[in-house]
Amino acid sequence: MDELVITVNIADRPYRLTIARNEEEQIREACKLINDRIKKYAELYAFKDKQDLLAMSVLQFATEFVQYKGQQQRSEDNAIAQLQQLMEIIRFNT
Image (cartoon, rainbow, N blue to C red; front, side, top):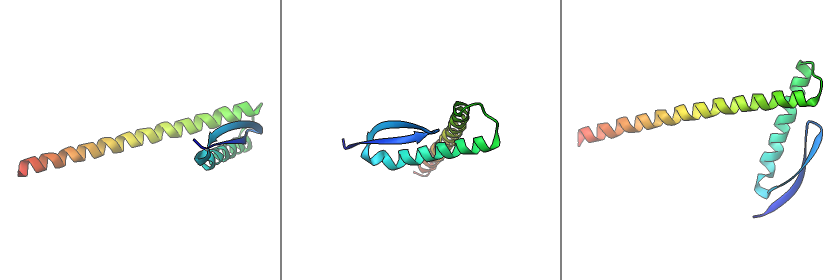
């Protein structure tokens, strides 16, 4: 596996990571999203330290992920139901 060592900053703290070379763009984009969300919360709310902002950012991302998973499951369930209907139509017509 082609690995790469990078340093990313999240909430003004550096983190040294060893990653697959092909993951670098996604990881840097994810860090940017996290830092942008932290900045947004810092502008909107009073906070004692960056840990509070980081916690709220993680909660928001986790909530979005859970919603996305639910939507994906509903889409998958819908596709399965449609396939079952098509199979019934095929069986009926043969």
